[in-house]
Image (cartoon, rainbow, N blue to C red; front, side, top):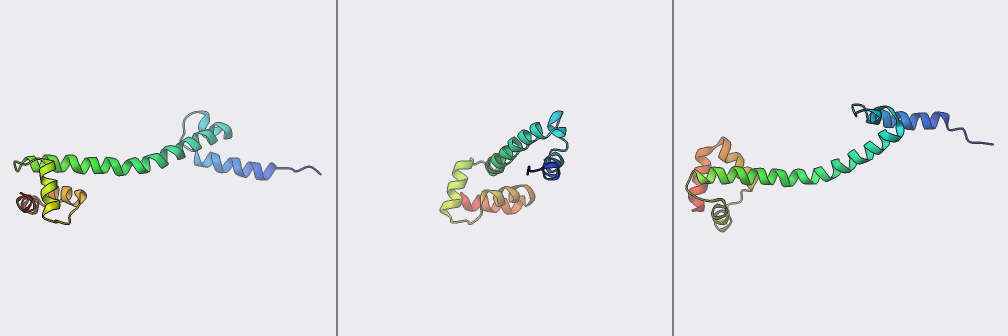
Length: 113
């Protein structure tokens, strides 16, 4: 007796097509191209979840560098001062302080000097 895959295949293909909604051209309508596109999209998503962490750290460093320059200091000496004085604030918190609480950030810079 042969195996009839009508319903199973249809459901599997339909699942892929719903996931590829919004893709361009045949990638959204056909199973084969859509599946390829979905696999590639998954790879990019996985890689970019790791890149996101790097990008944010770079953003915080850039913000801190600009904020510290206003106080006549450069980024590397500021970070060295922060670590030497054992100020337990990371780059994310420091950059947020520089933006939203400039007076508090000024005190942190004076402590790090």
